[in-house]
Image 1 (tube, helix red, strand yellow):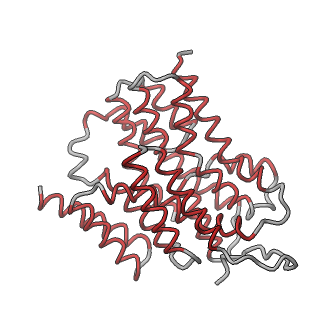
Image 2 (tube, chains in turn cyan, red):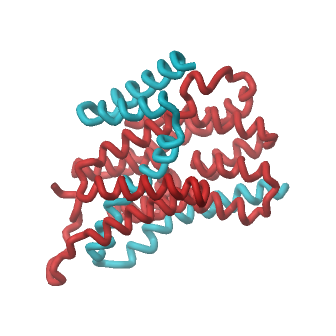
Length: 98
Length: 229
């Protein structure tokens, strides 16, 4: 097998280790410390924010406007209207602004 | 919710396959990555590093760094699926990617049970979409016209923003988002991708832990502390 295939399989093993390991390690503790609990509850917002923040800051007017509109729509409506609004604004502005 | 998740991931599966093919990665390896790793951002990073002829362990470590956040997903979801038999957990954790985690958290938020059938239905739909469309992307990559005009490259940030907005009623949401976002942007500029994910996330999580109000030690630990309104 080529080296690349071994790299991919090792990467897959490490990825599975991450997905199963958090539970295996933390389930050994019967009581979870309140600070750990607060940290865990912050995980989704903390991680998902890092996945869009750089794109927002390196984006042009079309990207930033689309994000702002999507964020405002999210305050009142559910996920899908937010997603469609953001995508429509993005495509329209990219078309208009070149 | 699995359908929007699959729809949002779809363009990125195609994009991943197309970019990997353009980088000269063999078709089999492109598909193998989607089948075994099943993590978009880490696969993109893998493809990027394959092109730079780095030592293998650096590529493996980078894939792990991008997916390290799954340790935290695993800990959070693992607490809610304690009734699942071990084999179901072992299978289920393979599918614990961002959208599946986010939908599981949404269930937790609504005080609903995370059932194995519900979880796997969503997991396999997103997985099948991911594998099939990245295969398609690898095959037809060169034929995709203007991905920029179609906004394909920016659908995922909008998707993640929507997920973050959905968590806005949680305690400490605003400080966590501001801390993680600011640190991620700074780390992205000065440390580089993929480390901004781990660094930014760690900052927000540590801030939440630091700001948490400790319970008196005698109190029993409520199962959903911090999630209950």
